[in-house]
Amino acid sequence: MTETTSIPLLHILSATPLLIATINAVVAAAIAVALALAFGLVGPVILLPAIAAFALVVVGNNMIGRREIRRGQAGLRPIFPSPDAIDQP
Picture (tube, helix red, strand yellow):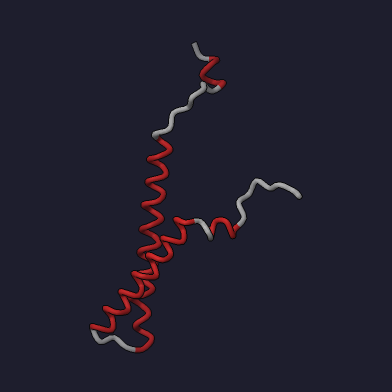
């Protein structure tokens, strides 16, 4: 059995944050369709608010996720000095 350093696509797609973000986007799209129906939209035009809501939530979740990951990484401090730090006086 060979080992690979890349993450298989299936593992990324089955990751909990991605699943939760997708479910959030689908719920937002369903709410957008319900609102569109309440305002009297019918036919294929009803897909426009659903697509817009889905895309908005996906982009928003992505932006929040990236910001939180950057914030978490910025808070990490190395335990051991790097080789560059050893060479400096």
